[in-house]
Image (cartoon, rainbow, N blue to C red; front, side):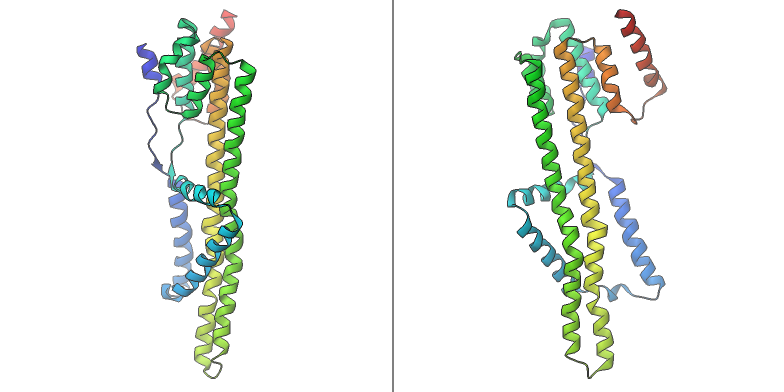
Length: 284
């Protein structure tokens, strides 16, 4: 029982995504640094009106395109871009192996006492169905439906930011045209015309930059987050199905190791699967 408690992972706390934060700093730093090296000033692109046109127009267009529920969900998912909440597949695998070991020793009904302590709702639901004696095929269909809905939700959220990335450059062009219209009113002053044209194109810069440095990268990062979440759901489902089938925990571990590829392991741990495979094969 002590080993079972040790195998259970703690709730994963959100960790800052260094790739996202570092990427934004590098991209913005490179662009602004290039501007200053070319003799420009940061005040040249610091235009509040252009920012209002681009952000206001883009957000408004996205609101027209997207249902309100999806829009609110997309706002909540923005935190996933800067902070990583995902759990290691190795930790999930060890948790499932602990349940498989307990079920093999004391029957699958014994897992009922562990249900309140299972942090992940998907895994808790799958084990609860297995404890209730749900047919394996029905259990798989029900949980695969949950996985499919999870995938659709992720795609819908990502499309919100993809839409914003598509609208922003066009809104930036609109802002530039509006600026040029104002410039044309003062053609009598050549100096003001040149300055006004430069200011007008700042909106285009904001539109293109926001699309390619924020909205589209955010959409792809959210897709990656949901793709990882779906993989972890599949890992859990395969593990629970192995428990229901009464497989040897060592065989379940071998079955789930494909999901943990690329995870950093110590040399001792990396040798363990081969030994487990030979032992399981010997047991038949």
